[in-house]
Length: 366
Image 1 (cartoon, helix red, strand yellow):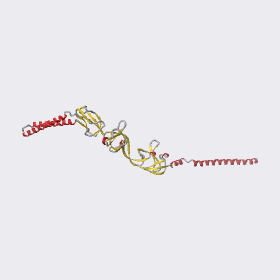
Image 2 (cartoon, rainbow, N blue to C red):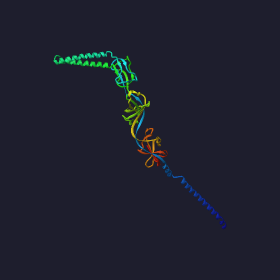
Image 3 (cartoon, rainbow, N blue to C red):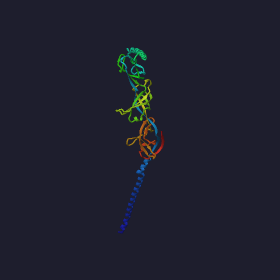
Image 4 (cartoon, rainbow, N blue to C red):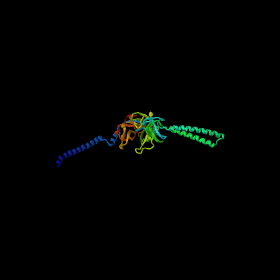
């Protein structure tokens, strides 16, 4: 019995040793895997730290006073329109005008036949001479007491009546010549030689084209930014550039479009600029503080707002919505940023609002 036990014990020792060795091997493998995992897979905090160290390039931008220009389409229009009417009845004896042709102030554009109007003037002049003699005689006799005061008063009344008749006859004669009240062009000619007209009948419609107006429509959003008397630029479809003044701003919007009519007054000597041609109007808006930047720096946030990313004093990336003031060849003018700001010019697509960043290659914008 004792010999058996002695023969079994070595095998037990061998089995126990193998078990311990396997256990140590398994335990050492777990430790190695844990060490490898800790080296290959950093913690969430470590991952955040890596992201926070994202490098970006910035450019310092300083806000500037900027006067934006509103560009709208317009058309030329005449300053005013006048209808010339006949002052007396009669037949048209002469027409000295043509539609679309220029006329000068005081120029005769038509004549009514004189007929007996010259004779009436002569008759009124003769009557006035007679009444004056009668009045002088009555006045002398009244002073000497040979005639009553009533007779002298009657003579004075007759003299005034004769003067009035002469004035009326002269006005009727003068009114046979129909003249232009302004420098302009004939828009419509309403009579021809031989036509019979009565007092008040239209003879012609004239338009005043100097100065000429350029009219356009401004939206209700921009109307409060425009001021009367401001200098404006007009470019005709022909390419001719003109300077003018904003002379009219409609006080009430048009019902259908909710826009306001704005007119720029432009000098038109010689009436060379025609009415009704297309023009581009550049209207100055009020001055604002704005930044000028490349359109490529504009981006959208999750809400779809247009804005710009910049780095604040704590090296944190920020997104702020901006308002586009004007798009020019030099760049985009925007409002909504701090007066002095470090714009992210490279890497803005890799950072989010509120993320800490590392800046490099700081440049100066503008």
